[in-house]
Length: 160
Image (tube, rainbow, N blue to C red; front, top):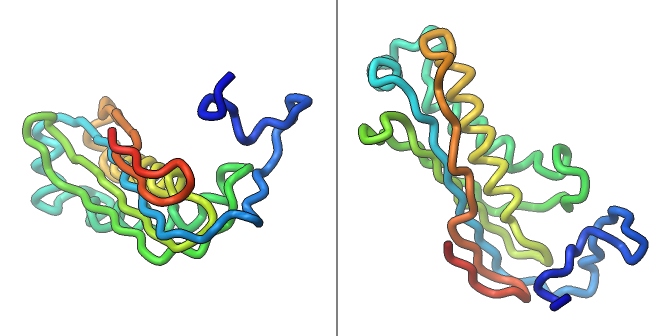
């Protein structure tokens, strides 16, 4: 098995463990992730016009995504707690879905990447959109949550 295919969180005996990043060099690291919430056109209009029963859907989802990125190590067992320097969550309308597209950018200077933080931010922002608009549209679909790009670290640059 090549080094690229090794699962870094699995020990020689098959047990899960946290990767030791103590000897790694600090580098600038950035990760960008995306996802979407597909909904009825009427639901998108309701959100756009600010008439959702629970309030500002987009603003609340943006804040939830930022907060989630900061809590990733509390949610995913083998993630390191990180001192993030930037978390940006952008939510835009997409009439072609129809629905909302969510993109998160996370940055830090450190010894481990921020891919999980970006993916967590997108996931929780999408779940928050669903939660806030479910009274109008229980059939909403959350999808295509994925890493778009990451820079920094030993593995270098990745772009989907």
